[in-house]
Image (cartoon, rainbow, N blue to C red; front, side):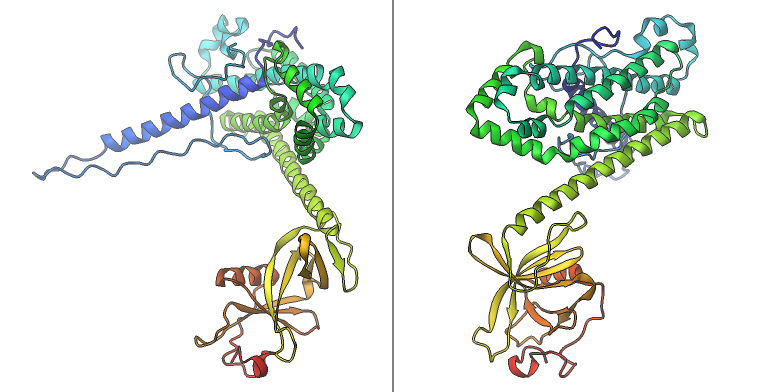
Length: 463
């Protein structure tokens, strides 16, 4: 890896920061150009009175920075290089100052007469392809450091339990191995034909292996975060060793967490680079077909990772809830990979006047397959008093006249059981519950429907 001609001591953290600067610069230039266009196209008024100045154009929001735990990003195209005279926000002082290598600066390209015959679009296309290669080189450099300097640290390994080490470093070694393999093939491709090399077929070939390591790594993120925070807060020895390792020139004094989030940043950036390749590739060609296929495979993998993360969080919440509930009714196994929480919250149940307690607070957990009705207890615990499949649920809006003291009412039908009359704090909250619980049903006007409200004769709420 370090013998590569594309290795220039630049770590992926620096590359990522340069790209963010580039996006901010591109956004600023686009906005300035738009404002200039508006100014020069304003017609001169023939009125002797000066025209009021045009409405000031609001500054655009800065492009969102890639959150370490998010896999979504803008799809806008990017310029290929930042002019040297342009001032941008300074790079972090902890980062290497080496500059990125451009394709047209390669010896086999800059002195090649064919370069002058390429159109601007063709040059830009090769630059984007080359950025896939050089950014992968930086990525591999950073992975080398995190594995050799942190993961293999004897001091850290002597402190970490096996489970903590697995959660903290997940499959970084596997990520590194496949990235080195991927980069080696990219490098060979460039060397075989530096003027016309392509990369998307190599990406397609590696996508199954990417999926095998990236989806588990990204899914493990919540455990990784919790483990890191717990160890830093509770294990002084771990904290001291990590801080010592972070101050080493070997990692350019970059924090461990900046290395742990690399796979999140890389897989998203790779997708964006391929999107740019698609935009710049001639339509209806083999190259375009390969680029589109590579883009779709990466998008599918990212979506699968997002789905897996969502599922993992759902299972975590179910495990947590399962430890807090007691069943007064028939027990329902809560933990299921297909179950997800749709909505939860406290509502008031209005009961018959003949009962000692005419109102009581009940807590609803609405899942995609079941609804749990519980009585809240101290310490965040719940006693489940009923549960029903969502296929048997129905919610109805309960209209009341203006002189009624009761508002924000709806009825909840749970299968063949007696319907519950529920009250929410606000009208909006009531409508959200109705929407979440059931498919659209005709609204029943309880002011006109005599005898349809179970509590009508005794509570006189609906008439």
